[in-house]
Length: 435
Image (cartoon, rainbow, N blue to C red; front, side, top):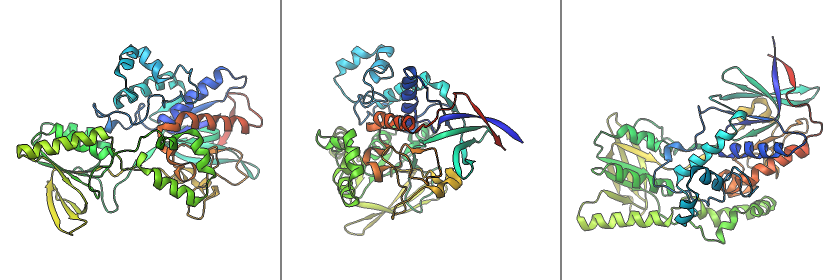
Protein backbone atom coordinates (compact mmCIF):
# COMPACT_ATOMS: atom_id res chain seq x y z
CA UNK A 1 0.00 0.00 0.00
CA UNK A 2 1.30 3.47 -0.81
CA UNK A 3 0.28 6.86 0.50
CA UNK A 4 1.33 10.41 -0.28
CA UNK A 5 2.81 12.39 2.56
CA UNK A 6 3.63 16.10 2.42
CA UNK A 7 7.28 17.16 2.62
CA UNK A 8 8.17 20.01 4.97
CA UNK A 9 11.48 21.71 5.65
CA UNK A 10 10.66 21.44 9.35
CA UNK A 11 8.31 19.23 11.31
CA UNK A 12 8.04 20.24 14.94
CA UNK A 13 7.24 17.70 17.63
CA UNK A 14 5.35 19.49 20.39
CA UNK A 15 3.98 23.02 20.44
CA UNK A 16 4.87 24.64 23.73
CA UNK A 17 6.40 28.12 24.02
CA UNK A 18 9.65 27.09 22.30
CA UNK A 19 8.12 25.69 19.13
CA UNK A 20 5.50 28.46 19.20
CA UNK A 21 8.39 30.94 19.10
CA UNK A 22 9.87 28.98 16.18
CA UNK A 23 6.55 29.09 14.30
CA UNK A 24 6.52 32.88 14.74
CA UNK A 25 10.13 33.18 13.54
CA UNK A 26 9.17 31.12 10.48
CA UNK A 27 6.16 33.35 9.74
CA UNK A 28 8.32 36.46 9.96
CA UNK A 29 11.07 34.90 7.85
CA UNK A 30 8.65 33.78 5.16
CA UNK A 31 7.01 37.19 4.99
CA UNK A 32 10.22 38.64 3.60
CA UNK A 33 11.92 35.63 2.05
CA UNK A 34 12.14 34.70 -1.59
CA UNK A 35 12.23 30.98 -0.75
CA UNK A 36 9.89 30.16 2.14
CA UNK A 37 10.69 27.58 4.79
CA UNK A 38 7.78 25.18 5.07
CA UNK A 39 6.84 23.78 8.45
CA UNK A 40 4.15 22.03 10.45
CA UNK A 41 3.90 21.24 14.16
CA UNK A 42 2.16 18.39 15.97
CA UNK A 43 0.88 18.82 19.53
CA UNK A 44 -0.83 16.14 21.60
CA UNK A 45 -2.81 18.60 23.76
CA UNK A 46 -6.22 19.60 22.36
CA UNK A 47 -5.21 23.28 22.48
CA UNK A 48 -2.25 25.39 23.50
CA UNK A 49 -1.36 25.03 27.17
CA UNK A 50 1.69 25.75 29.32
CA UNK A 51 1.88 24.49 32.92
CA UNK A 52 -1.85 25.02 33.38
CA UNK A 53 -1.80 23.25 36.73
CA UNK A 54 0.39 26.00 38.18
CA UNK A 55 -1.36 29.09 36.76
CA UNK A 56 -1.98 30.49 40.23
CA UNK A 57 -3.82 33.81 40.13
CA UNK A 58 -1.24 35.63 42.23
CA UNK A 59 1.91 34.07 40.77
CA UNK A 60 4.17 36.23 38.63
CA UNK A 61 6.73 35.39 35.98
CA UNK A 62 10.36 35.12 37.05
CA UNK A 63 11.64 36.59 33.79
CA UNK A 64 11.15 40.06 32.34
CA UNK A 65 8.31 40.59 29.87
CA UNK A 66 11.01 41.65 27.38
CA UNK A 67 12.10 38.00 27.27
CA UNK A 68 8.91 37.11 25.45
CA UNK A 69 8.61 34.98 22.31
CA UNK A 70 10.23 37.50 19.98
CA UNK A 71 11.74 40.69 21.39
CA UNK A 72 15.31 39.47 21.93
CA UNK A 73 15.34 38.31 18.29
CA UNK A 74 13.15 40.98 16.67
CA UNK A 75 12.20 44.00 18.82
CA UNK A 76 9.82 45.26 16.12
CA UNK A 77 7.79 42.04 15.94
CA UNK A 78 4.00 42.26 15.98
CA UNK A 79 4.05 39.15 18.22
CA UNK A 80 5.59 40.95 21.18
CA UNK A 81 4.11 41.05 24.68
CA UNK A 82 3.73 44.82 24.35
CA UNK A 83 1.68 44.40 21.20
CA UNK A 84 -0.45 41.84 23.02
CA UNK A 85 -1.04 44.38 25.81
CA UNK A 86 -2.01 47.00 23.24
CA UNK A 87 -4.47 44.59 21.61
CA UNK A 88 -5.91 43.73 25.04
CA UNK A 89 -6.32 47.41 25.96
CA UNK A 90 -3.95 47.16 28.95
CA UNK A 91 -0.76 48.79 27.70
CA UNK A 92 -1.16 52.01 29.72
CA UNK A 93 -2.24 50.05 32.81
CA UNK A 94 0.82 47.81 32.55
CA UNK A 95 3.15 50.79 32.17
CA UNK A 96 1.62 52.41 35.26
CA UNK A 97 2.12 49.14 37.13
CA UNK A 98 5.91 49.77 36.96
CA UNK A 99 6.73 46.08 36.96
CA UNK A 100 8.90 43.95 34.67
CA UNK A 101 7.22 40.71 35.72
CA UNK A 102 3.66 40.02 34.49
CA UNK A 103 1.24 37.67 36.16
CA UNK A 104 1.78 34.09 35.04
CA UNK A 105 -1.85 33.82 33.90
CA UNK A 106 -1.35 36.98 31.83
CA UNK A 107 1.74 35.61 30.13
CA UNK A 108 -0.13 32.41 29.39
CA UNK A 109 -2.88 34.49 27.80
CA UNK A 110 -0.19 36.18 25.71
CA UNK A 111 1.03 32.76 24.56
CA UNK A 112 -2.51 31.77 23.57
CA UNK A 113 -2.95 35.08 21.71
CA UNK A 114 0.26 34.45 19.77
CA UNK A 115 -0.57 30.79 19.13
CA UNK A 116 -3.91 31.76 17.60
CA UNK A 117 -2.04 33.83 15.00
CA UNK A 118 -0.08 30.83 13.73
CA UNK A 119 -2.62 28.05 14.26
CA UNK A 120 -2.53 27.20 10.54
CA UNK A 121 0.82 25.47 11.03
CA UNK A 122 -0.10 23.30 14.00
CA UNK A 123 -2.27 20.22 14.43
CA UNK A 124 -3.56 19.93 18.00
CA UNK A 125 -4.74 16.67 19.50
CA UNK A 126 -2.12 14.84 17.44
CA UNK A 127 0.49 12.82 19.30
CA UNK A 128 3.67 11.76 17.54
CA UNK A 129 4.27 8.06 18.10
CA UNK A 130 7.32 7.38 15.94
CA UNK A 131 9.93 8.83 13.63
CA UNK A 132 11.24 6.63 10.84
CA UNK A 133 14.10 7.18 8.40
CA UNK A 134 13.45 7.47 4.66
CA UNK A 135 16.45 6.26 2.70
CA UNK A 136 17.99 7.45 -0.53
CA UNK A 137 20.51 4.72 -1.13
CA UNK A 138 22.60 4.50 2.03
CA UNK A 139 21.68 7.99 3.20
CA UNK A 140 18.72 9.09 5.29
CA UNK A 141 17.09 11.70 3.07
CA UNK A 142 13.97 12.46 5.13
CA UNK A 143 12.21 11.64 8.38
CA UNK A 144 8.69 10.24 8.40
CA UNK A 145 6.82 11.55 11.46
CA UNK A 146 3.89 9.29 12.28
CA UNK A 147 1.01 10.27 14.54
CA UNK A 148 -1.45 8.34 16.68
CA UNK A 149 -4.30 9.09 14.28
CA UNK A 150 -2.50 7.31 11.43
CA UNK A 151 -1.41 10.49 9.66
CA UNK A 152 2.19 11.12 8.63
CA UNK A 153 4.37 14.05 7.65
CA UNK A 154 7.69 13.88 5.87
CA UNK A 155 10.44 16.20 7.14
CA UNK A 156 13.80 17.38 5.95
CA UNK A 157 14.49 18.48 9.55
CA UNK A 158 12.97 17.72 12.94
CA UNK A 159 12.67 20.14 15.84
CA UNK A 160 11.84 18.31 19.05
CA UNK A 161 10.22 20.52 21.67
CA UNK A 162 8.38 18.10 23.90
CA UNK A 163 9.05 20.04 27.10
CA UNK A 164 9.79 18.73 30.56
CA UNK A 165 8.43 15.79 32.51
CA UNK A 166 7.37 16.01 36.18
CA UNK A 167 9.93 14.33 38.39
CA UNK A 168 9.11 12.31 41.51
CA UNK A 169 11.70 10.79 43.86
CA UNK A 170 12.69 7.18 43.27
CA UNK A 171 10.14 4.78 44.71
CA UNK A 172 7.30 7.33 44.77
CA UNK A 173 4.30 6.63 42.56
CA UNK A 174 1.70 9.26 41.79
CA UNK A 175 -1.87 8.55 42.86
CA UNK A 176 -5.06 10.20 44.12
CA UNK A 177 -3.36 11.36 47.34
CA UNK A 178 0.26 11.63 46.13
CA UNK A 179 0.88 14.04 43.29
CA UNK A 180 3.35 16.37 41.61
CA UNK A 181 2.82 20.11 41.89
CA UNK A 182 2.16 20.31 38.13
CA UNK A 183 -1.35 19.02 38.96
CA UNK A 184 -1.96 21.56 41.74
CA UNK A 185 -4.94 23.55 40.46
CA UNK A 186 -6.73 20.48 39.10
CA UNK A 187 -6.37 18.71 42.45
CA UNK A 188 -7.41 21.79 44.43
CA UNK A 189 -10.59 22.07 42.36
CA UNK A 190 -11.42 18.46 43.20
CA UNK A 191 -10.82 19.08 46.93
CA UNK A 192 -13.09 22.09 47.18
CA UNK A 193 -16.14 21.24 49.23
CA UNK A 194 -14.20 18.73 51.31
CA UNK A 195 -12.56 19.35 54.67
CA UNK A 196 -8.91 18.31 54.44
CA UNK A 197 -7.01 18.40 57.72
CA UNK A 198 -3.37 18.31 56.60
CA UNK A 199 -1.15 18.62 53.53
CA UNK A 200 2.53 17.78 53.25
CA UNK A 201 4.52 19.73 50.65
CA UNK A 202 7.97 18.40 49.72
CA UNK A 203 10.49 20.77 48.13
CA UNK A 204 12.34 24.04 48.66
CA UNK A 205 11.96 25.87 45.35
CA UNK A 206 9.57 28.47 43.95
CA UNK A 207 6.88 25.93 43.11
CA UNK A 208 7.02 24.38 46.59
CA UNK A 209 6.62 27.78 48.22
CA UNK A 210 3.72 28.66 45.91
CA UNK A 211 2.00 25.35 46.65
CA UNK A 212 2.34 25.88 50.41
CA UNK A 213 0.95 29.41 50.16
CA UNK A 214 -2.01 28.42 47.98
CA UNK A 215 -3.03 25.42 50.12
CA UNK A 216 -2.73 27.61 53.22
CA UNK A 217 -5.08 30.14 51.59
CA UNK A 218 -7.57 27.75 50.03
CA UNK A 219 -8.09 25.50 53.05
CA UNK A 220 -8.19 27.74 56.16
CA UNK A 221 -8.81 24.84 58.53
CA UNK A 222 -6.03 22.60 57.22
CA UNK A 223 -2.43 22.34 58.39
CA UNK A 224 0.26 22.72 55.73
CA UNK A 225 3.59 21.05 56.52
CA UNK A 226 6.48 22.13 54.29
CA UNK A 227 9.34 19.62 54.28
CA UNK A 228 12.76 20.47 52.91
CA UNK A 229 16.45 19.76 53.58
CA UNK A 230 17.48 23.41 53.94
CA UNK A 231 17.16 25.66 56.97
CA UNK A 232 14.71 27.81 55.05
CA UNK A 233 13.63 28.88 51.61
CA UNK A 234 16.59 30.44 49.76
CA UNK A 235 16.08 33.57 47.67
CA UNK A 236 16.57 33.48 43.92
CA UNK A 237 19.68 35.30 42.75
CA UNK A 238 18.21 37.70 40.21
CA UNK A 239 20.86 40.38 40.60
CA UNK A 240 21.95 42.16 37.44
CA UNK A 241 25.39 40.56 37.12
CA UNK A 242 24.21 37.04 37.97
CA UNK A 243 21.48 37.31 35.35
CA UNK A 244 24.16 37.58 32.68
CA UNK A 245 24.22 33.78 32.76
CA UNK A 246 21.02 34.06 30.67
CA UNK A 247 22.51 36.41 28.05
CA UNK A 248 22.75 35.06 24.49
CA UNK A 249 26.53 35.55 24.61
CA UNK A 250 26.70 33.32 27.67
CA UNK A 251 25.52 30.39 25.56
CA UNK A 252 28.57 30.75 23.31
CA UNK A 253 30.89 30.99 26.30
CA UNK A 254 29.34 27.97 28.00
CA UNK A 255 29.36 25.89 24.83
CA UNK A 256 33.08 26.52 24.23
CA UNK A 257 34.08 25.81 27.84
CA UNK A 258 35.53 22.54 29.02
CA UNK A 259 33.55 20.21 31.27
CA UNK A 260 35.19 21.36 34.55
CA UNK A 261 34.29 24.97 33.76
CA UNK A 262 30.75 24.03 32.78
CA UNK A 263 30.27 22.15 36.05
CA UNK A 264 31.64 25.11 37.99
CA UNK A 265 29.37 27.60 36.23
CA UNK A 266 26.31 25.47 36.96
CA UNK A 267 27.26 25.34 40.65
CA UNK A 268 27.96 29.05 40.79
CA UNK A 269 24.71 30.10 39.19
CA UNK A 270 22.25 27.37 40.12
CA UNK A 271 20.59 29.79 42.56
CA UNK A 272 19.34 31.85 39.62
CA UNK A 273 16.84 29.09 38.86
CA UNK A 274 17.02 25.93 40.97
CA UNK A 275 15.57 25.55 44.49
CA UNK A 276 15.27 29.30 44.74
CA UNK A 277 12.26 31.42 45.72
CA UNK A 278 11.30 35.04 45.07
CA UNK A 279 12.14 37.09 48.13
CA UNK A 280 8.64 38.61 48.30
CA UNK A 281 7.12 35.14 48.66
CA UNK A 282 9.69 34.15 51.28
CA UNK A 283 8.83 37.26 53.29
CA UNK A 284 5.11 36.57 52.98
CA UNK A 285 5.46 32.98 54.22
CA UNK A 286 7.60 34.13 57.13
CA UNK A 287 4.96 36.71 58.07
CA UNK A 288 2.36 33.96 58.11
CA UNK A 289 4.46 31.68 60.31
CA UNK A 290 5.21 34.48 62.75
CA UNK A 291 1.60 35.70 62.88
CA UNK A 292 0.36 32.20 63.66
CA UNK A 293 2.89 31.84 66.46
CA UNK A 294 1.59 35.06 67.96
CA UNK A 295 -2.02 33.85 67.66
CA UNK A 296 -1.18 30.41 69.02
CA UNK A 297 -2.60 28.53 66.01
CA UNK A 298 0.18 27.20 63.82
CA UNK A 299 -1.24 25.95 60.53
CA UNK A 300 1.85 26.60 58.40
CA UNK A 301 4.62 24.36 59.73
CA UNK A 302 8.13 24.34 58.31
CA UNK A 303 9.88 21.01 58.86
CA UNK A 304 13.31 22.20 57.81
CA UNK A 305 16.57 20.24 57.64
CA UNK A 306 14.37 17.19 57.13
CA UNK A 307 13.39 14.67 54.51
CA UNK A 308 10.50 12.28 53.93
CA UNK A 309 11.79 8.72 54.34
CA UNK A 310 8.54 6.82 53.90
CA UNK A 311 5.28 7.84 52.22
CA UNK A 312 2.41 5.36 52.16
CA UNK A 313 -1.07 5.76 50.70
CA UNK A 314 -3.35 3.81 53.06
CA UNK A 315 -6.38 4.14 50.80
CA UNK A 316 -8.04 6.85 52.88
CA UNK A 317 -5.03 9.02 53.73
CA UNK A 318 -1.27 9.28 53.29
CA UNK A 319 1.15 8.49 56.08
CA UNK A 320 4.38 10.46 55.70
CA UNK A 321 7.37 9.73 57.93
CA UNK A 322 9.68 12.75 58.11
CA UNK A 323 13.23 12.39 59.44
CA UNK A 324 15.38 15.18 60.86
CA UNK A 325 18.73 15.30 59.09
CA UNK A 326 20.48 16.53 62.23
CA UNK A 327 19.01 14.35 64.99
CA UNK A 328 17.52 11.41 63.11
CA UNK A 329 14.25 11.94 64.98
CA UNK A 330 11.21 10.82 63.01
CA UNK A 331 7.79 12.45 62.88
CA UNK A 332 4.80 10.60 61.44
CA UNK A 333 2.23 12.80 59.71
CA UNK A 334 -1.15 11.58 58.51
CA UNK A 335 -2.18 13.79 55.60
CA UNK A 336 -4.95 14.11 53.06
CA UNK A 337 -2.32 14.59 50.34
CA UNK A 338 1.43 14.76 49.84
CA UNK A 339 2.51 17.18 47.11
CA UNK A 340 5.95 16.80 45.57
CA UNK A 341 7.40 20.02 44.17
CA UNK A 342 10.52 18.17 43.10
CA UNK A 343 11.13 19.66 39.69
CA UNK A 344 11.17 18.39 36.15
CA UNK A 345 13.48 16.45 33.88
CA UNK A 346 13.94 16.87 30.13
CA UNK A 347 12.29 14.28 27.94
CA UNK A 348 14.73 11.88 26.26
CA UNK A 349 14.06 12.20 22.51
CA UNK A 350 15.76 8.95 21.50
CA UNK A 351 12.87 6.53 22.20
CA UNK A 352 10.72 8.59 19.84
CA UNK A 353 13.47 8.53 17.21
CA UNK A 354 13.49 4.73 17.09
CA UNK A 355 16.40 3.35 15.07
CA UNK A 356 17.61 6.91 14.45
CA UNK A 357 18.44 7.20 18.14
CA UNK A 358 21.34 4.78 17.71
CA UNK A 359 22.78 7.07 15.05
CA UNK A 360 23.04 10.00 17.45
CA UNK A 361 26.42 10.52 19.09
CA UNK A 362 26.87 10.52 22.89
CA UNK A 363 29.67 11.72 25.14
CA UNK A 364 31.61 9.66 27.68
CA UNK A 365 28.84 10.24 30.25
CA UNK A 366 26.16 8.91 27.90
CA UNK A 367 24.70 12.35 27.17
CA UNK A 368 23.65 13.33 23.67
CA UNK A 369 26.18 15.42 21.79
CA UNK A 370 24.65 18.63 20.49
CA UNK A 371 26.09 21.11 17.99
CA UNK A 372 26.13 24.83 18.70
CA UNK A 373 23.02 25.28 16.50
CA UNK A 374 21.10 22.87 18.81
CA UNK A 375 21.36 20.07 16.25
CA UNK A 376 22.10 16.56 17.47
CA UNK A 377 25.48 15.24 16.38
CA UNK A 378 24.59 12.35 14.10
CA UNK A 379 26.21 10.05 11.59
CA UNK A 380 27.09 11.80 8.30
CA UNK A 381 24.54 9.60 6.50
CA UNK A 382 21.70 11.69 7.98
CA UNK A 383 21.18 14.61 5.60
CA UNK A 384 18.68 16.46 7.72
CA UNK A 385 19.04 17.92 11.17
CA UNK A 386 17.41 16.80 14.40
CA UNK A 387 17.19 19.89 16.60
CA UNK A 388 16.43 20.01 20.32
CA UNK A 389 14.49 22.70 22.14
CA UNK A 390 15.39 21.70 25.68
CA UNK A 391 17.53 18.92 27.09
CA UNK A 392 20.72 20.76 26.13
CA UNK A 393 21.69 22.15 29.52
CA UNK A 394 24.89 20.08 29.57
CA UNK A 395 26.04 21.66 26.30
CA UNK A 396 24.39 25.10 26.16
CA UNK A 397 23.91 26.01 29.80
CA UNK A 398 21.13 26.88 32.18
CA UNK A 399 18.91 28.56 29.56
CA UNK A 400 18.26 25.23 27.83
CA UNK A 401 14.68 24.83 29.06
CA UNK A 402 13.95 28.40 30.13
CA UNK A 403 12.17 31.27 28.41
CA UNK A 404 15.12 33.65 28.79
CA UNK A 405 16.83 32.71 25.53
CA UNK A 406 13.94 31.20 23.59
CA UNK A 407 13.56 33.99 21.03
CA UNK A 408 17.27 33.96 20.18
CA UNK A 409 17.49 30.16 20.16
CA UNK A 410 14.71 29.70 17.60
CA UNK A 411 16.33 32.30 15.35
CA UNK A 412 19.55 30.30 15.44
CA UNK A 413 17.74 27.05 14.66
CA UNK A 414 15.90 28.62 11.75
CA UNK A 415 19.10 30.14 10.37
CA UNK A 416 20.80 26.75 10.62
CA UNK A 417 18.02 25.11 8.62
CA UNK A 418 18.24 27.82 5.95
CA UNK A 419 22.04 27.66 5.77
CA UNK A 420 22.08 23.87 5.50
CA UNK A 421 19.41 23.68 2.81
CA UNK A 422 21.33 22.73 -0.31
CA UNK A 423 18.57 22.41 -2.88
CA UNK A 424 15.12 23.66 -1.91
CA UNK A 425 12.33 21.50 -3.26
CA UNK A 426 9.12 23.24 -4.31
CA UNK A 427 6.75 24.01 -1.42
CA UNK A 428 3.93 21.54 -1.22
CA UNK A 429 5.83 18.75 -2.99
CA UNK A 430 4.72 15.27 -2.12
CA UNK A 431 6.67 12.05 -1.95
CA UNK A 432 5.40 8.49 -2.01
CA UNK A 433 6.03 6.41 1.08
CA UNK A 434 5.61 2.67 1.32
CA UNK A 435 3.22 2.04 4.18
